[in-house]
Length: 122
Image 1 (cartoon, rainbow, N blue to C red):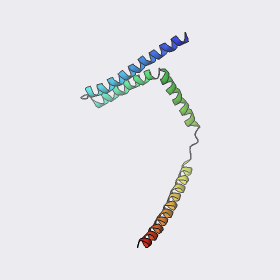
Image 2 (image 1 turned 90 degrees about the horizontal axis):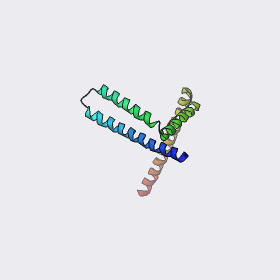
Image 3 (image 1 turned 120 degrees about the horizontal axis):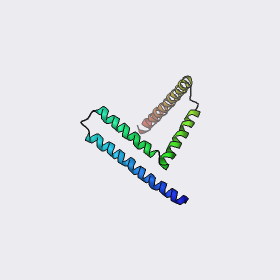
Image 4 (image 1 turned 45 degrees about the vertical axis):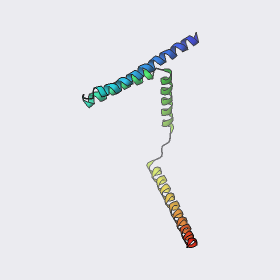
């Protein structure tokens, strides 16, 4: 019996994905077909039909998985300890300082090697 239910869910998911694809094709085609209409009306229609398509997609097994993953990602983002403005400024200044020091070292080594090569070549 479980295999029968899983088969029906898979078939229903396929139908839902076909409806989602059809809605997106309608959005693209309708946007071109009604090109002479107001941009605001077309934008609202695109947003509305796209939201309907996303709503249908979220009812599929893959959509539920993606929605759960999205929720878990937001939980993790809330756990992040973001640096303060002062920490960010200090870290940026350290990085800039190190880059300048390394740039000066590389410039000096390049100049020295160029001088040595020019003396050897003549």
